Image (cartoon, rainbow, N blue to C red; front, side):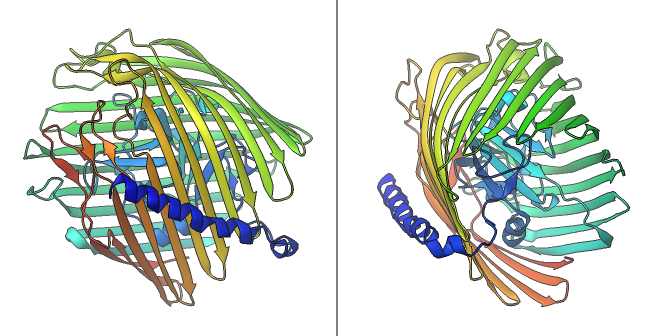
Length: 613
């Protein structure tokens, strides 16, 4: 798909969404008095429950119904083409994947699971490919800087995954089994419930596939993943609450090294305990202790990477009428002890970070104000101050204007600072400034949201020839996003359109697009309930991207179609069929050093049977 065709497609899509807003604004929609179901409650944007319009941010919620309908084999399939989100993969099924938001890199966007940060301290980004979507109940994607709330790396945005909680009632079992193309098998089971203030959820899953080649003429590259989840909580009569969560994924993935098959064993883990106490009627205090681990054993290179982050976070939430304030402190320790790069150990194996933060959520209806400030002190790269200010104005009961300004920073990784023979110990942290304007329209059955933004990044860390890293003085990213959705007459529709201009402003490549970023993308999801049956599909398209900084190595754009169907054939029993890449398109979003493409899987069909609610 060339740029001209992509542009025409995006323009057609934009025109097609206009009737949604027009029909949504008709008076009869406002007069029904029905709840605004498409204005969901989110918590990531402001550290507190807020509806999408009250959050004063660009936010996308992928709820439990969406995850169940699409039943993706990987999280990247779920995120690909969402507003402002770009995905790069080195092939399918457990291969290296990155998720970037608004033209930033994967390491400049933050992944959290139930409030616990997960990433590799050596690479900087998260290993998205090793997380099973069936372990999660919903996902929130917040676009724009959140450094003043979450610290380092939240420059492009934050993705937070939420695990399920037990529902009130007797223990409820759930099982799922199935398989499909490429000798793929999937199994999962869970048990959940709640009684006497105690909630519990236990789950396990297994994914195993023979895989597909990642380069033309190559051999199949397999992948297996075994995951387990435990979540417990208890609420006392006085409103105090304690709980714990532990999620672990372990397995192996095969990959290609110069035409040879290699294997990596991996382990991903997050675990945490928390206690929340109502000090007074308008003051709640919460303490969370957590650990996140990212481990890999690369047999081909005889390299072991064992990174862990331990965090203690204390939050205090105070309310004063319609206003709310958050005050807190955080201590974290990153460690790479036990790692072996194949060239020897790291020059430094751990670092500490201390932080204090505050936020004010002020409601002067129809005007809302959100302000936050954070101070970080890191022993490896010094101190950073980040802040944000957002203003919202309710034009009427259905339309909200917003504008925001925020700063953020990205911390240099252990690889960039201390990798034996290649690290640059005097690197500075990347810093950014972002300005955004947006407007949202929310109605009974429809919604739309539009935003424009500009991000300036100073000291962008870049790999140079010879493996060294250095800071690039300035980078500028501009973009626009449009999202729309509807739930009416058993139809569920969601559409998104994004334009991103990530401009490299280094002296050597000034004016070029940053590598591995598409500038135009769209996604359209449609689902229909037909009694005991459900049918649906997704269309995702992106234009070309460049594999290099001088924009001479071009990867073509692509468009893929995914189809799905469900049948509730008996009480508590459901069968689902998904067909990924139904038109069997060959496409690639990354390229080998030798010039070959990392090709993704062609047409793939999967059948699964589910028992449970």
